[in-house]
Length: 264
Image (cartoon, rainbow, N blue to C red):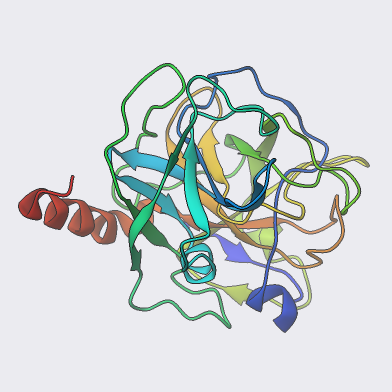
């Protein structure tokens, strides 16, 4: 099933999105051990800029926007974190040695908004550090599937930024529902979610690249990419994600090359 993006597409929203969790709740510690944060390292608590998902001992999957934005030594990959205000036993700060940006990424349109961070050292698996499971190639996330978004960042506009990792349960929506706006930007490699209700949850400011998994599993189906009206939290528009299953070949190629060169 194709997922369409039916949003009024503001150029500023596409060029510099900043997304996170609105109307969510605290996660339990170790509930989402594949979570990775990309943060500047010159202050504490570390400044949250982007997120991603662990997919291997030296690899974190995120968006191309995040890879392009974090290209200096002030950024680290943070794994094993839950409370961002303290250093935790499981927490590790890992350097970035390479950004594997999708070659067809178009920043102005958010096409192929996917990238792999290659880490400077191997992760050690523990209760708080585990990889997400990648979906089968081209596997669809049907409408009405229950999915869960996790992330740090602002929870309501830019008023409050929580220390504890947040989560919100959402629902994948159909092509027709996602295409209900007057203007649409369609891409076969994206999917949409929405949560009904006056106080709806979803993305907000601070967590582009946040992982979306099938609820109750570690199967990674999406990475938070963009939405219209990015400054309003919560928003009345659907959230738009990179559909991970459409990039299995791209991801597998990077990991296979790393195995050959000894980086995995």
